[in-house]
Length: 143
Image (cartoon, rainbow, N blue to C red; front, side):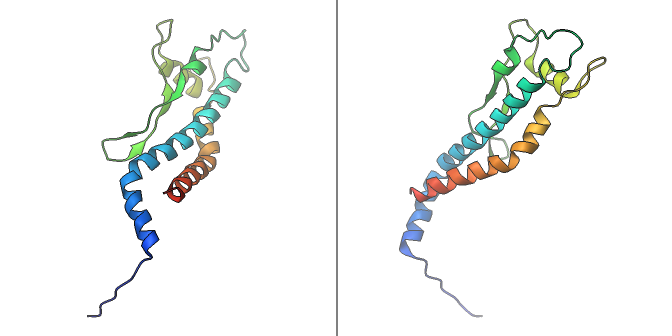
């Protein structure tokens, strides 16, 4: 059987070894950058659908938009890093922000759906990936 030895440049090997120690830190920064972009798009979509095309005057209090946020990067049970974009609970009136968002997104009897989450996910996917790549590359270059 043939044997092959490949010699890597010394600076490249040093970067790889330092990257190994900072992988979690770099991943978190990239996820925060991507999460911020998606959250901004969700917020914009949400503000455009709240109170739009209603038969009666809107009773919006701004609580739902104010409760929108991005979690800190965490490792899930599968060992993958992720961030979550969602709504803080509870509301001042005792209702659930998740319930209100679900009704807005999918509608209910007598209230047509006004999707804001799914369109935001689709519209921001490419920009989110690019931002995460950019942050990752900047962090790797700074090593």
